[in-house]
Length: 251
Image (cartoon, rainbow, N blue to C red; front, side, top):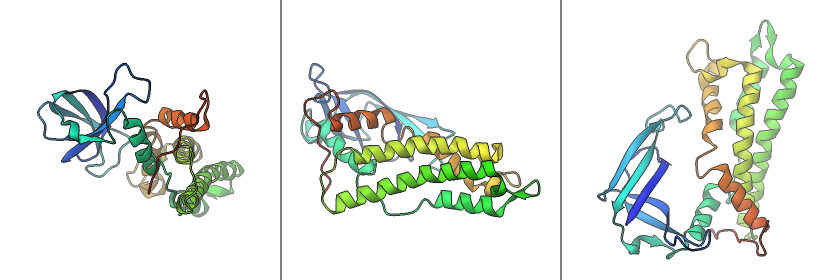
């Protein structure tokens, strides 16, 4: 019998199955009392409430998230993944994938595009990047993004050489979340409030920059909060523990 609420769920809401982590042993030790379960989305007792978020994407269904409510929803024990009370271990494997543990080889094209925009666009008769303060800020923005790119390369190497990972995935997404939010602030300092609108002719950079500006605050929640990242990093470093927690296995 499932009771509770899960929020910030999905984009489009037309799934056959939902997944969630549930408390299955109220008296059990922390992180050893949870189970991962697949839930048929059409079960009686499941309702949802649509969330309209300023930080979501512009195209449907990206503009929406959902809160899902479970009230005496009967889910078969067969739907448990990994067995009872092993949900945290299953979640670790999932988070390794979602949080960048497999790595990424690529460039930060949005920041490269921003750099080109600043080199090619004039304001008050002067090209934007001719301003010394703008150049300093642009360098900081670019460094923040490049650190995340390098984390992606490192994680790709670890995974594809079959090295033993620890907290690298969570470290990567934690840096991305914090640096994206910082970059949003720095870019608005450089280019002003026109970065947060996409209507012509006023929008900076023809409006494409506005999407990046909304991704910063949005990224603080998706795939678990940054509190989850800190918990995973601390447990895998062995902080406050006698045994370090192993990373999830991703084949």
